[in-house]
Image (cartoon, rainbow, N blue to C red):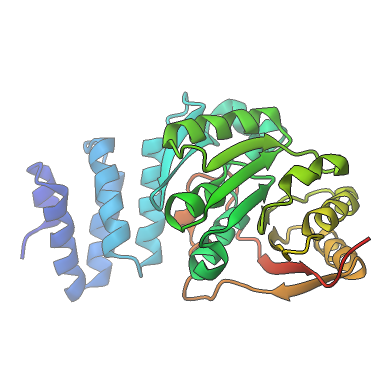
Length: 310
């Protein structure tokens, strides 16, 4: 049986090192965990070598949470140099551009920074879309408060959506979405637009969309009535569009206010969580490019208009 430590000291291919670790793991899990940890923490191994190793560790030891955590930390440090303000991340074959949460200027979760990070609820929306292709295929998607647009971009690029309009109100977020759109080159299938929730008269241009998605859009309970009024306009259409909402429940009162307002406004709410077998968002490896690993409970539900709303 080959010794992983000996192999990496000989600058062997990463694949050989991981295979040696896999062989050891069959005999003793503690040994392989200790070996990989030593490799990751070694000061004489280059960061690029560690990053390649971390990707293989994630694939080869996906049931070992401790190794997954170590690999996530290595990948985060390899992608995010403290001096870099943005980084490009290939998340499940979907390329997105995020702000660097480790840069000193981005340590406060305020203003522009919030919409330029990847949050748990956005990942949940993507997982839901992956698990329910019947809602996505050939659909016209409107994403509200898109942030970095992970779900919207993925829906068009690989899940079969006809097109997507990604919206936000923050100018920096909209600029970033445009940078991503041009980089991934989706032609005319993805548009980026400003959508002000209170401007109900401007919502007519979005009436052709049949699937509306919104992830972590509400932080302030005072915004709930405006959000619900906007949803009444967007969902009030003969072709019966449906909205998929995902909320990280950080403030129970804000979440309950949203539920109450939707119920009294004539909407049908259908809880629709991603099954535990499909969930990835609760694992730290999905959060390596976010600032806060809170593991907040994420509620997902479908919203439909019960009747023509007035």
